[in-house]
Length: 503
Image (cartoon, rainbow, N blue to C red; front, side, top):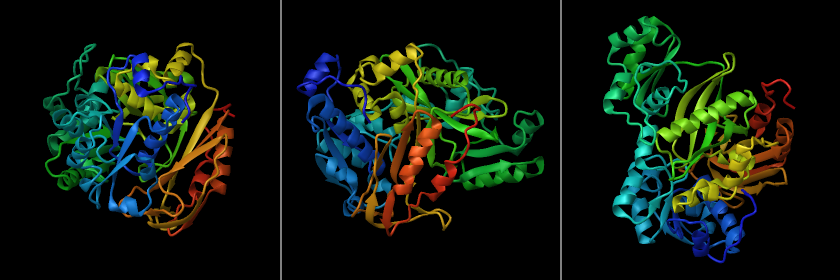
């Protein structure tokens, strides 16, 4: 996405010298595919063209499976070099630490960009790069990833900083959060926050530490396994045994359920000099099967004062764990009580980051790249101007709404679909921008993400942005063996805003 008007430089070396960069990153390995890979490549190419008048001033190396190559994946054409890697599920390719490190070394890459999904939140990857490669990791440190990657640990840090959290089994556990020192959550802290056995669970219920309905969750669970909602005392023991049986050996914690809430999140940028900046908030409440489908910003469900508190809480948490690069702090917002609660931290760039890019007029993948080069935030175009506006309390007079385009069949319980794309016709405008991981003549294969595109609309108001997005979706043509009809999005976007007076 376009940022502020950049200066032009004759070369990357000149840019680095002029901005006091510590490290030169000339060649980047994109350790991803699909939407993540194409978005990073487009962002870097645009910045290079604007800054150096040479779209290839930064060289891009791509990993390519046989399935992606045969599917005509869009990102491949943006790469200067490609490395063919084994096909099949991602543990053989994009999520394989060994494959990524080997490729980084083979192509003498200066850095690795992880994107989202696959290996992006595996703290072992930056550790191995540090130990076995000269390539640096474009993302937070492995120590920070450990501190926030575990929901139990990150919740302990949040409540230790007096950030509101939902009542849970570990509500009494706190750690020291001294300034300029990484908050340390030990295995003992985590053990104390979890449930020892059924008797301990009943004790928590009797002492009103958790109240019905509450969630029992296995810390090592995922994909719908190891999670149960406990609605009354009679079901507590059975739910505990089901959770412990599904994810054997895992720690289990309990947390109150919050109903009638919105899912809000704050975009964070941090540099290596200790500065952490909250870059606005997004509302990602509209989801299907716990997957976001519509995102927008700024949120209209809460007033600006609460959103500011939300952003400051996110920045406070990230400072406590020495957060570096881009990340997202997620919250639940209880509409009736007008209160927010910490949910989790995603130690990576998120799919919906473009919502924030359009609100703040910046290029976030390139901001990640420049942070990794050692630039402070106030030297990064787009981010610098945003910080100046934020300091002056100048609000952005715009609203952004996004819709994910997914290859799922709405008439068959939204099951993922695969197959060839014979026609894909998307018409952008001054109000609408979008990108696709596959286009006309391409194919959606069985191992790729069902999301094949993302469309973003901007307006002066929410109503205007919604109108632009709906018009774009109605004219979007996708014809072929897949099913990606946007009719459900059209219906969801007619949800009324929750703040009176919003136009």
